[in-house]
Length: 70
Picture 1 (cartoon, rainbow, N blue to C red):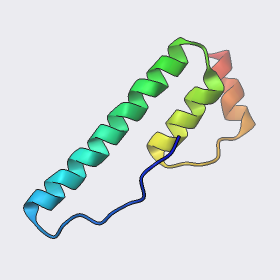
Picture 2 (picture 1 turned 180 degrees about the vertical axis):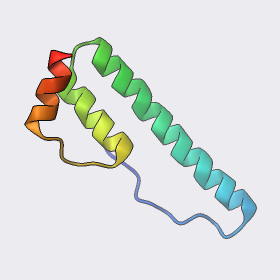
Picture 3 (picture 1 turned 90 degrees about the vertical axis):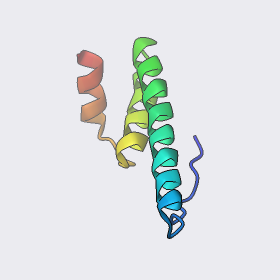
Picture 4 (picture 1 turned 120 degrees about the vertical axis):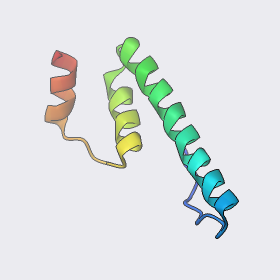
């Protein structure tokens, strides 16, 4: 999954609104992919999407095992 590099918002209210909407849309897309992966039983992929959503790039194996066991 490729992500766009962070761009500072324009120093205007419109720029701030646009940046906020871009972040919200990105997060919504990741949440949809996360839900689909969980429903499909693709736990490794779901963990990756969850990591992307919260900004964590490493998930220990024990966490993956706990999610699969749940």
